[in-house]
Picture 1 (cartoon, rainbow, N blue to C red):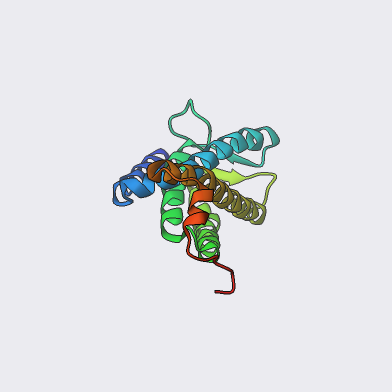
Picture 2 (picture 1 turned 90 degrees about the vertical axis):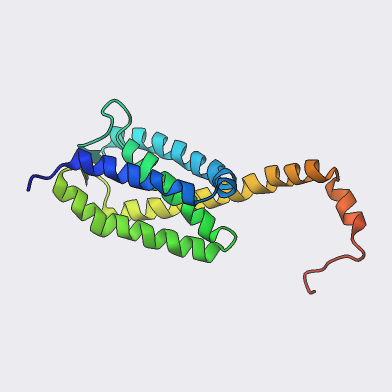
Length: 179
């Protein structure tokens, strides 16, 4: 049987995107900023990776986009939304799930894609790329937390018409960390 790496990439993208309707519109909107931030960062990273020859991607879809297009638009985008949806607010679970998914990609999936001629590592090892994935996971979680702190608080204040000081005054007593 002849291997069809471009077909595999298209299937990977479509299956990933087909899971998004099950995510729910509210969750999609909530976690989209963190996911888009990381997608742009990864697109910029791909330019650096190509310049310094960290890895080589031999098969890509469509051929005129950046090398990692299929991975960014497919499993990374959908996977990031799902991981944030399932674990946001529980950092340790988020980090463990990310590490688990990244390990699956770096070891069995990487081996399969390398054998199909889709990509291979050049000047960066698998372990270094795995570490880079974990750093990006931390950046995405941090960005999402900052985004929610700034913009969700604003939208809640606009919807209720109160400021943070007014909310503090409305409490019957001060809440301490010991309670």
